Image (cartoon, rainbow, N blue to C red; front, side):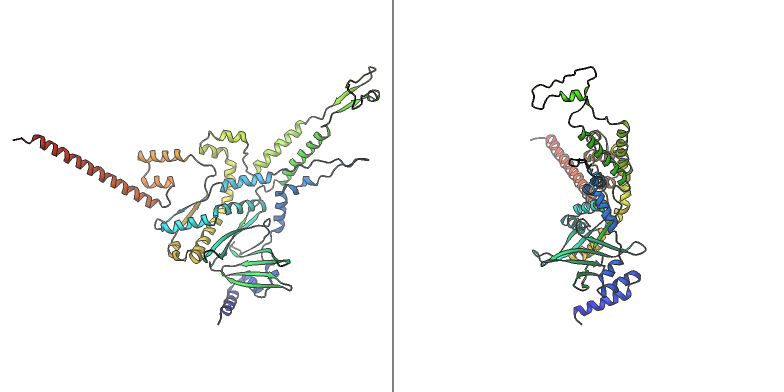
Length: 485
């Protein structure tokens, strides 16, 4: 039996062993009916398109303001002034969650240090932190995004390697997740278009733990090519959340409308306007005359400049309320230059209290992303064990790695270390806890052992020096007390 036959037999068994919607999906894939297979998956295109319209200032409602028609003249152009509130709110949310890279540590003391170093080096090489930020930014703007761990063979080295591709609608991808009733990801579909020859061809790949089914739209139906998945896991991390400004779009539209109408009024009164009686208007000097005097012939003549209507107190109050509510209702701190100057003199705990809104939203988002980062960690380990670092499979399998979202504001590390050192010197903290709190060692147990060895070596050296000095003094005393002939 050749490879293709074995692959087909395995695929048949997989279809028979699957349950519920997964079994229906496998049957449709086997029948090359990708269009119906797509209908079994979740479709969030409507809410994604709505979010993208709100995120893009060019598609805001204020851009649809109609110009004012004037009889015998060209239309009066109304101002259309959208804002990028959505981007600001989304970037602040991203800053509080991923402003600094995620921290990793080994939770089991028996974990191999070389394997953990290889894991962190792998994260650096695949640019984990920057790709994580990209995916989070897109999810906050579009309500969903995904990261695909694409496995390929490096032409330079001839070895298998991995590349992270961030997927989203704005990047040209169609995302179709499939979950069971318990929230487990059963399969993930990804649609895209590729330039082939003189035309563009639609593609749709379906990722499962055992196979990656690569679909290509043919003249009639679809062509499907199954590819074995070496990791045993779905090589995609799917991010889903509400928009960062969820529920505040009507207030943002209102703020933009007020700004645009105010600008119209300012434009209308930009050139000087005056009120004058008919006789005065007749006597007005021509534009090229050197004199600018205006002659009033009688007490009934009138000439005065027309001032623009002053901005009402209610309008200013509404603008202030809109700004405050947009930020407050989205749990978004205001980072104005004035506020940032004041933060420079505050301690870490004081900054947390001042920025409590951002920390509330950060904890809310951690409910989503904490679980996803943990799943991504397991996927990365599976890729390393089965694809890129097979020689370290056993060491990687025994690793127990934990993650922690870093604080968004950088603390004064020197002051922190001094406090920990003083607590250790005063006997308040143990050596083990002090090394843990400092957080500078990848494997704190090894660091503690090194410190102890250095202390023992130092104590031994001091003892030997003292012993040598004592022996030298004895010899000197003995030579002094010995009588000479």
